[in-house]
Length: 401
Image (cartoon, rainbow, N blue to C red; front, side, top):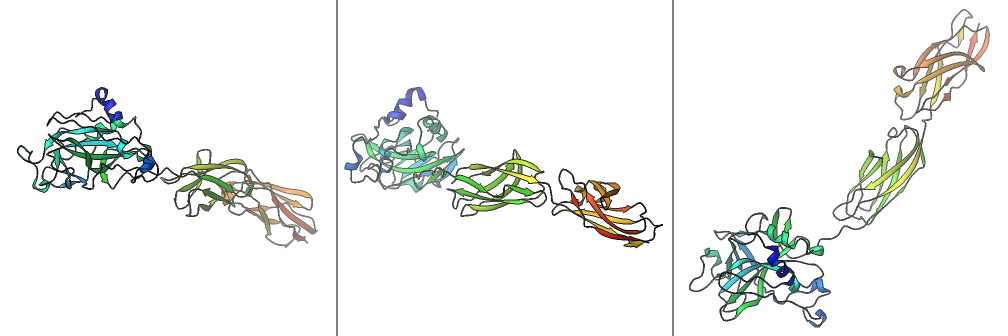
C-alpha cells in the first residue's frame, strides 16, 4: 500500500496518526513538549529522552504459520502478523501497528510516525484468526499494510541524524470505551539497502573520525636504490585502512596502516625516473576513520655507477693489440639499463671509444690500438645516460715490450 504523501505528510511530521478504517478507532501519538530535565526518566539530552509510553511487552513479527521473522525485504509486505509479548493496556480488544522514524537529538515520544496497518480485534467475539503462537497476545494483521520502502520514502526528507535507517514499530491497543491508548509495545528495525533486520535499539551510527596524514622522509634518492616514507595518520588508531603513495594517478606503493597509525612505506628504486617529483600520500580511510592525504616532494638522482676494466694481459709485445674488458654497474639497476659509451684513455689521451648497447648488459671486450714500447696507464670512462651517472675506472698498468 502506497503512502499518500499529499494527504499524510502533515501527519508524518505532526505525529497525528491516521485514523484506521477498520474497527473505527483513531489514534493520537503521545508527544513530549516540556522540559526533559524535570522528568525522572530524563537521561542526558533530547536524544537520550526515553518515551514513558513504551512498555516492556516487546513486539515481534510473525509469518502466517506463527514463526518469528527477524529480517526481510523492504520492497515486500511486512510479515503476516505483529504481536506484543504481553498486555499493552488492560481490557483493550483491538490493535494497530505504527512505524516511527528514529531521530537522534529528539525525544522518542516526538519521533514522526504513520499508521502502517488497519485495526484488528485480537480478543473476544469477532477476533481475527491468528496462529496458535499468538494466542493471548495483542496482535494485528499486516496484510495490505505498508511496505517499509513506502515508509522510508516518506521519511526521507525528514532526516534522522545519526539514527539513519533505524525505524521503530509500535503496536498500540484500543477499545470501544477507552479509545486508543498512549502505551505501546515496540521493536526496532534497521534498513540497509533493500533489506531490514530487527535490532536491539536505535544505536547511533558513529561518524568516521577525522584524520590527518603527515609524511616525513628523504628529499632525494638515487635511482635504483629506492626510498622509504614514514607516514603518520592521526585519528585513525585501531581503525585499519591502507596508505597509498602516488604520482598523479600512478600508484607507487601501498601498505596497510599499523594499529598505532604509523608506518614506513617503501618505494622501490625504479618507480620514478631521475628528476623532481610531487607525490601524494593518501590514507584511504575506513568506516571508523575518514580519508586524508598529504603531499611530498622528492628528487630522484641518477644512479651512482662504478666502472671497472680488466686487461687481457698486463704485459704484451709491441706487435700485439692490447685488450681490455670494461664493465659498469650500479646498485639496483638492471644490466640492460647501461647504454652510452665506453672511452678508453691512455693517460689523458682518448685512444678508443665504443658504443654500449642494452644488449651488452653493461660489459664490453674492447680491442685497443697498438701501443709503443714502454709503460702505459689505461682507464675506462663510462659516459652515463638519463638514469645512470658517468663514472671513471681506476688506472691499469700496461707494459709493452
